[in-house]
Length: 560
Image (cartoon, rainbow, N blue to C red):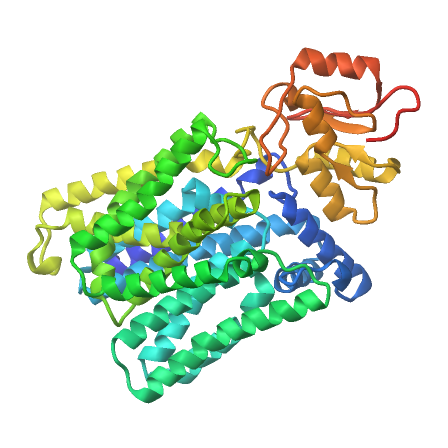
C-alpha cells in the first residue's frame, strides 16, 4: 500500500473514531438515550422483545425501521434496548461522516485533483462533521433521524447513478428499491427531505436532455417515490397511526409546490449561471438564517416559542466559517453535471427550501419545529462544499488546477485553513450537549432522574405536574402510567399559583429554568423552591447533576 493510500486510510479511521467518541460523550453522565424521543423507541423495542410482536397501537407511521433495528440489536446482544440505543446511534451517526467524505472525494475526482489535495478536502469534511455541534446533536441523539442522515446521501447517489450510468445498473437499482421502500417507514420528515432531494436530482438529469427512455425512467422513479410516500402516510392515518409533519405540507399545498418549483429552477440555473451569482444566492439564503436567529434573540420570530439565548447565538455564529468556505467551493459542484455534483446541489437546496417554506407558511410552534429540523440537513452538504472550498483556496496557485507539485506555502495555507474550519466546528460542539432554550448542561436524563420518573410512574395515580422532559419520559417509556403535564409548572414559574397536584421538580428550576418546549422556559429562585418544598410534602428526592424532588401538596389538594 502506498504512503498516500495508507495516510487516507488512517484519516478515515481517525474520523470514524472521533465521530463515534463525540457521539458517545453523553455516556460520561448517563447510559440512557440522549434525547426524550429515544425513550419511546427503546420502550417499543422492549415491548417487542417481550411479546414477540410490534406494539402497533402505540406506533407512529415511521417507527417501524428504527424499532426493528433496536429490537434486533437487543436480541443479538442480550442487552436492554434502554442501554444499547446510544451506541447504535453513535455508530450510524458517525458513519454519515464517511458518506460525506466519499462525496467530496468524487467531487475532487471530477476536477482531477491530486491525491494530497483530495485528502485535505476529505479531512476537512470528515473532522468538521465529526464534531460540529448542530450536526453532532442530531446524529448523536437516539432518534431514527440519525439513521436517515446516513441513508439520505446514499439514496440520492443510488438514484443518480441509476439514471446516469449503464454500469452496475441492476445493483444500483436494487439499492434504490430497498431505500425507496424503507424511507417512509424510517422517518416522516426525512422522507420529505429525500423526496425533495430526488426531485432535484431528477431536474438535473432532465436538464441534460436525456433519451426518452432515460427520462421516463427518471420520472417514474422520482414520481413513484412521492406517490408511495404520500399513499403510505394516508393509509397510515386511516389506520389511526400518528403521521407527523405531513399535515404541515398539506395545509399549504400551493405554497409547498411553489417552493418545489424554486428548488428545481435554482438547481438547473446553477448549472448555467456564473460562480458569483451562485455564491450570492446561497450565501444570502443561509446568511439570512443567521440574521433571523439574531432577530429571534430580541423578539421571537415564531410567537409562543423561545427567544434565542445569547450564548447559543455566539456558538452558532462559529458555523459561519464553514459556510463561507462552502460558498467558495459551490461552483465546483455546479460544474460537475454528471459525476456527483447534482447530488451535492440537491442535498444543499432541499433543506434550504423546506426552511423557507416553514418561514413563509405560518409562524407557529409547529413550523418552528419544521424549520429547526430542516436546517440540520444542510450541514452535511455545507461541509462537503467547505472541504472543496478550503482545498481550492489553499492550492489556488498549483499548476494544472492541482495536478502539479504544490508549493510549500500552499501546504502551510492548507494547514492553517483546515485548523480554522475544524476549530470553528469544535467551537459549536457544546450545542450538542445543552438544552437549546435554557443552555442547561447536560441535556438528556441521568440515571437518578430516570429513577425519579420511574418512581412517579409507579406511585402517582393521579395527574401530576413537571417540566417537558419528565412528562415526556413517563409518557413514552411508561405508557400505562398517569400522564404528567407541564402547564401548571409553566403557570407557577411564570408568576401564578403553585400546582395543586404532585409535582416532579428540579433544583435547576431556580437557576437555568424549567424546559417547557416549545414554549419559552420559566424560572423561579432557589429560595422560592426551598420554601415551596418546606411547606409541602417531599415524598421522593434524588441527588445528582440536577437534584430532583417529588412534592405532594399538603392537605387534600390533588387536582392540577
